[in-house]
Image (tube, rainbow, N blue to C red):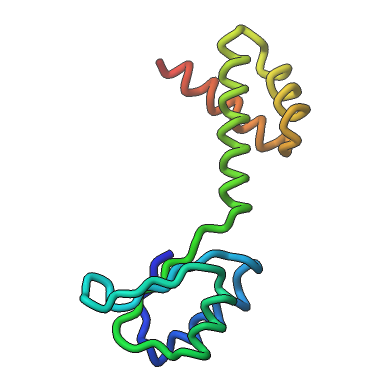
Length: 127
């Protein structure tokens, strides 16, 4: 997420982000980007909040908030499950056993894996 904020409102924005986001969420606060005095502060939201409470910013401010690691992990798990399911289907295994195997291996919800397997079968049938 990229935000452009007034230096007068930066501390308030960081306070809001700190209360809304999981502890340890990464952030980069850039000041005066593409100018002679550009500065970058990288760390957690609470680190940035402490810094800018002590040293109020001046000039244009850009805030880049890192993605939630948990969301990235879920996307990775889904992609792995999709890959395994495709491999098992391509090997000639019936959909029911593919669903059972992927649920057992991944720990994902059965209805989610069922949807993945049947989406793969539907896309295979369209070819």
